[in-house]
Image (cartoon, rainbow, N blue to C red; front, side, top):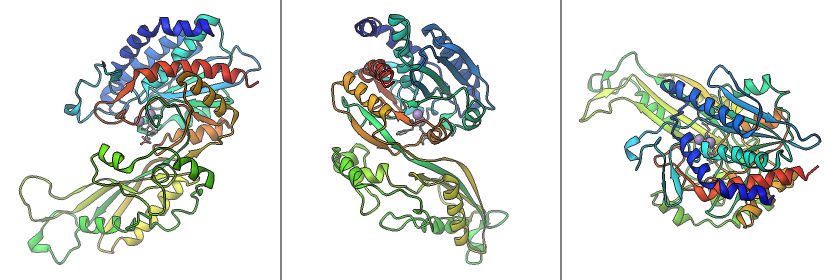
Length: 456
Ligand code: BES
Ligand code: MN
Ligand code: MN
């Protein structure tokens, strides 16, 4: 192990240079103008996987952006890890709010600033460097490894479920490992044992065939924006309870043990509120802050539009109104079932003066894993060895919809060993990744391979 750790120290600066190189590629999956960049990024990862000594390295086509796959299966009798991550990134707008261009990485105060630094290219790179260090210094890994890096996570992993089904046999593994979550606090490693799911829909209301003069018609027709806000206002009560019939049916209750665990994590609501510029926090009555954030579902209007939005005033009754809405779900809520329940309830509230159509856009299940799982415990030991601190047990409010698909099809527990930080600005301007976490992350995965190798 000493040789491997020395290798990490020796190559410390090269790792940062290479990280800078992969962060330069503007691989924004949602924008077709970046299709070539997606390809270039996939090619770069393929080259990297070859150079660190992975076998069967290939770019596998899907109906969208490709998956980059490779394996190293020369540890017979040892567990197999399927390491999943995503090489696509979010769009960069509003680009003027970045202190430096999103695809020209800069290092400042121990952090590297670039789109995709934390979410998720910096984190997938941790695994590549840990594999490289083992193979370069020991000639082998103590576990079997399969790498699956997709290019469509930020657009809902559109084609990954089909991919997993098609390649089910190739993907068999004992544990799925994902580094795509933040730690809870700087310097303290965390393991995430739960994620929320998601149901995302668009609501379109139509009142008339064209916009109307609000003086000549107002009073005789129903305004679709009025109708839409009336309906959306009935989704939640003042205490933050969601009013969609049957919405909470499959929500797993928070156990006493978990309640205590979450309560013991330091969380200062005033500090949190001021860090996001909010006058005060809001949430479902009867639950602790972190329970609301991690273990309870939400309903949010993500966007709403229609009518006149230009300068000045225009007296108009718009023909149409639209809203994007989403619900963060928790285990065991089913996103399709929730989309149906939302749709049925919303439709029941639509007045007969209106036409409505509701499109379910995408979704995914939430996830919780068992804290006693031996793989998770191996992860805890590895993180503790690298960071020298007791590990935080976390859930997350965000979603990685494919996690549940992996759990069901690969039939292996999913271990979420994330190295981001709460102020990483994922999806926002000035996304950043702590270089301390990057290097400690590599070290922890080096240990993790050893710990998992010792399991059988
Ligand atoms: N890495 C995030 C998931 C995440 C976010 C985990 C915050 C923990 C905390 C992932 O890349 C992401 O952004 N997921 C989307 C999913 C959506 C596009 C289907 C999300 O959570 O909104
Ligand atoms: Mn991510
Ligand atoms: Mn993301």
